[in-house]
Length: 76
Image (cartoon, rainbow, N blue to C red; front, side, top):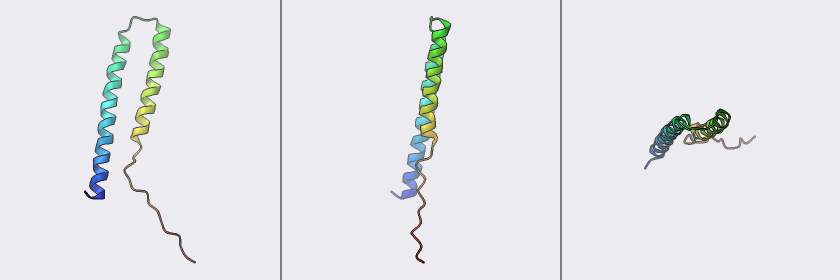
């Protein structure tokens, strides 16, 4: 398998994981709305939940499949 094909597979898998995680978080957040708990506790839980989602998705949104461009040292 060629390098470019591997990068594409990695990118597609990363995007698929982002999509799946987004669905999981949306479903879980919908369930939070149906909990019979006091408003303050619900607000705290919702805030932590959103922070967790942001951290998980932000980490995955960074492209890791692009090659690192390096240059050899120049001789003077």
